Length: 179
Image (cartoon, rainbow, N blue to C red; front, top):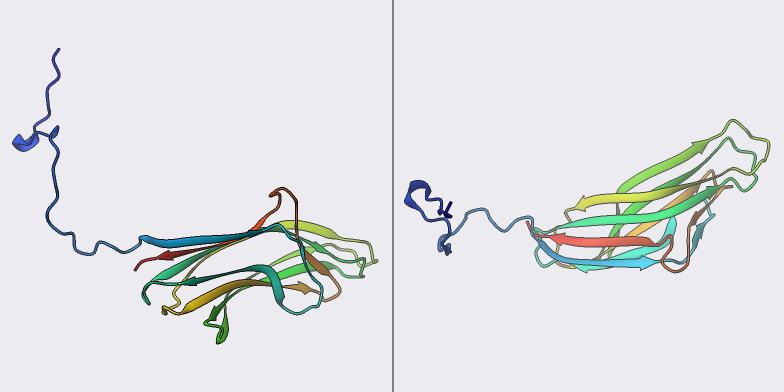
């Protein structure tokens, strides 16, 4: 049986066509730039105050209407440090710093492990920090995004885990998306 070309409405679909018109509303949602920083160094938090965990990256948007998709990933452990506590937790915050002028918290999350003991036995748990957040910074100035952590209670400790040979890397990725 010979090959026949489909011709709905008399149009030969085997031919190449060039589009010469325009599509209104097109252009939004395109990836304009992307960058990522990866570390495999160990960072500890033991002060009971928010402090940086070694993940930050800077981006300058090409338009004030652009959005920035921030993705953070890293493995961490929380240790009760043999304290007489019934829980150990980690609080996480994502910050935006606009041109080094003002730092704003734009996202927060919390993880906690409860154990019905307070005898001073060591309690350790590990988890993965995964943040995906779409920000609307409304600027073309330089923006730095960073991750901070706080141990709770203050007698506990957090370790943003390090590995070697790209094992247990912690990563922050910034993607500018056109509006």
